[in-house]
Length: 123
Image 1 (cartoon, one colour):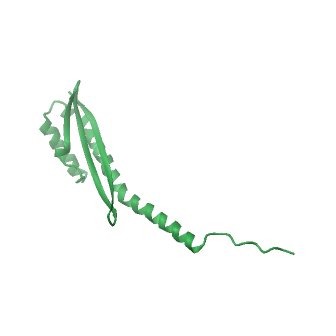
Image 2 (cartoon, helix red, strand yellow):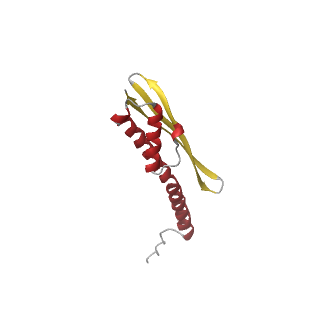
Image 3 (cartoon, one colour):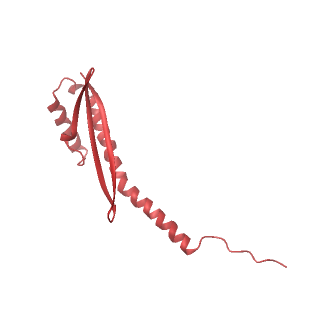
């Protein structure tokens, strides 16, 4: 006599739970990817300022204006030119941008990302 095989596979509840988890991960990714893209842009701007030979002998105000101009060109509104800090180091000036970015995920749940970008502008 043959024994009937048990059915295998996911139940409807299993599929619903799986889709909810995939949806939550997708929601978080959609909200956080732009935050990290802005962070990479700010990092490349700071690195670009450090490697720009025309800014080596300029005063801090001109470096800050160049930073603001590059932020505007790249459409970065999370960081302002006033967030650019200068620290004197041996052989140059360290450019530091430190900021937090808060994103609403859903309801009263927020995500906060903290970034610090720095580069040394040689004299």
